[in-house]
Length: 468
Image (cartoon, rainbow, N blue to C red; front, side, top):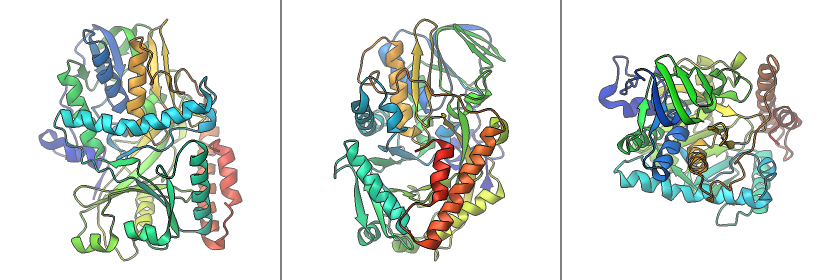
């Protein structure tokens, strides 16, 4: 089994650019001295690349430079679960506080669903195959309390404008008709999800952006961002517009350690399963899969017949420290293997790769897109697990703001909002571990008691985290 080396997705897309260890090797040279451009984007993940893409459409004559600390897709864009999802982005109660109120939340949700065809259309126009299957998503319930939460989730979706066509509750039999999982009582189903290969999307998008005349400088970390200037080890970039798209890596920048919490998310992927295995499991629709327990998992059936599954593992590193090229600890690998065995006890699987990455989590668990025309500084992020979709919309929002356009994107409720800062250490570390420790106890309690009511441990964890 390979451990780290960014991710399976990036290794799978590396092709002839692999280094001797098999990891993706940067193709693009770093910055080669001081330079002046119209726009400098910091970060070559989904947010930065989509921002550059839409800026090029809006400002065809502008000079645009993207600087990246490592290589394209090094962060969460190359390590995620591959869900292009129409799920709620952020917490509605925070986003509804904007000028459009509840309608703004509905608008964001509809924009997310509309983005599927836009993203896949752009990829198709450039003959880029991202292994996309529009199969929707399933959230399964295996205890009475999980099933009760799914019923409540459907009711909440109705309250925010989602219809029976958007989301509905499936019976145990209906769920089994889609996928065979041990002990399932029912599931929430929505058609609004596309399963895809994250590495193919981010590397394909980078090639599209470069073909449009945008320069990407890899191995060029931003050491300091100020109005009109980005300082790097290889030279200073002078630009009228400086747009930060650093998400889970924001804490590395001076003065930004408490802006977002780099929450760890971990993944494993199996070797390809046999035809007999897939016949037993089903999953022919390639729905994205998750569970309603508190210690969340997410999964997909890949185009080459593997199961990719993720979860939190060790949630946070003291002082907002980050991982070492995605290397995953043994305990978390064991935990994720246990989730696989719990879903399919009779399945004999071998793990091919394990890795981890960081999500940029704001204190209020809700995203922001901010642009200050006076300073030329802007940023976008805080997607908390919905980044494949949200990064596209945020990049387009940020580009439209810079271009001075009034569009459906600039009117979305995340525009101009700012989240409070996280508590200083050791409170961040203590709170993170307390939260996930309580969630694990809650799952064990609910599985044992079989009550419908959500465990008091989980309700306490929700209070600690501020998520509900």
